[in-house]
Length: 446
Image 1 (tube, rainbow, N blue to C red):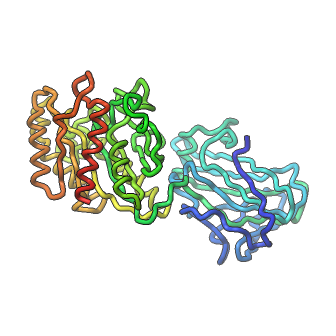
Image 2 (image 1 turned 90 degrees about the vertical axis):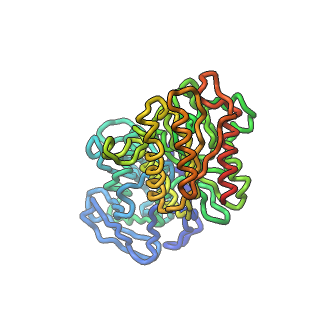
């Protein structure tokens, strides 16, 4: 099936065509004031003819005619993955056969330069602009040049993360001196609900397995299994992170391996409560949680033991940076309203880890506030339950100490929450309650 969807713009006068849908684009060339950096290739570098709204080249050489995109369409355009590459195309040739218009893209990847191409529907009429909307993701219609197969997701994403070339090719071998024109070229990210009317409110949820979630949504009210379009969730742990409506399936903890699509953490009830309390704002959650990880080893800021910082301290910044850059690229205003933290169980087994918890947490909070550019960003932590670990109380005391002594840091009690049979992870009803408690603090300080 051809994924490049087309629509004829039959009512358009030459050079005065309907604009593409109003999305927050990553790059656009409407050619209203000039060629916008586009150039011709493979046609003896033919001159570009410009008129407001369109650029044209004439066939002057036996080589293939193509337009090459300028730098603003190149580089790291990962935020467009799953979105659309669109443009309008016209030729004055009444017969395009036996050639076929194409898109060709190249990127520098870990495997060297990779190139993909996609054949487009042939124009049905001469001198009529035809609009193409091309899904910007791997599919069977894209062909990996030199490999005779479609690109994998990993290959496609690698190409668009360091894109070096995009060409719109439109030549016929049955005509000479023909004209080939393009208009309204856009690169758009996937659609997100429009925020009405205020800026996006962003919350970060991080920690270990009791933030990731060891609970099966099939064991609670069915309402929690439905997608919540009022909240957008970016799950930074997955292979292809991106924004989607709030749903279960974002645990990633080993306890959810049997049926990962059903597992959830406190984000479901937290997001629902925040959306209800803020009906005029779009709520966005960035979730990044990994089970079995200590603050001392994995989340620590740079120190003597870990001079480059823990691996998750670095990775959460990559995830936050990607998510926030995507929001910026899509034209949204946002504010990081708070950081939610449910972690500490993995620091309770060794005294040296527990003793450093207060110091490490203090530095971690400061680093997250520095990253988002808000030295007063609210930080809400869940105090861990004592599950009988040798130094649980030391970590619990450290959490309360930090919340008591650092401005805008708050803690919530979890001692009355129930456990799963493993005696360490909160059960389904308690996980829902944990999300409510996080929300109660956020709403109270808003």
